[in-house]
View: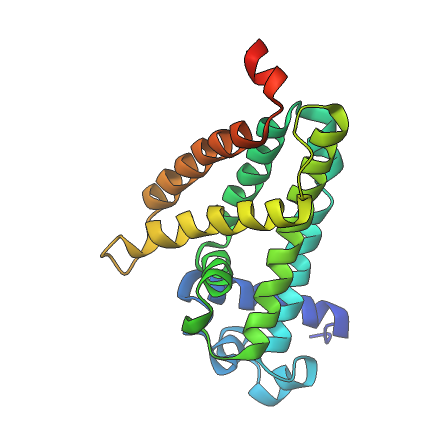
Length: 213
């Protein structure tokens, strides 16, 4: 059988790792298990990725590419800050459906740093957090430009919003005594996040627009 091209082999490893991380979580997944899934040696896997965190960082870059370019589509098809922020939440929800424990672990790490000791993991999680903040920041800037929102510190406000949304997710997950995160739990959290977004935007909307409504 013809050997895979290095880039194809790398992609195969990434796909196998995504499945493992999504089903078992980041902490409970080892490179040995990923190698076993692919029926290759651990040394062969190390040739492409020196450790779990290097592999995870590459996976995060793949996920960021999947979502990062959506902001123009959001501006084009959704009007108003509330709808645009809710669309970002819908994109996150789709990711959670596809990559359940992987996305939840990245979310958890950024809200509850004390739970994750490895600084490489914190760095990777922070990258995802900054991407989310960047998308929200662009929505808020557009809202100010259009006159829908008050003039606010968009950087601080975007970080506050993303942190609050993530906090809802963490509290919802850990309030559930079951060790298995069910989709019903994720759907309930998503509904809370959508409602919170309405309340959040109403707090920074321009007064004259509020009166007109």
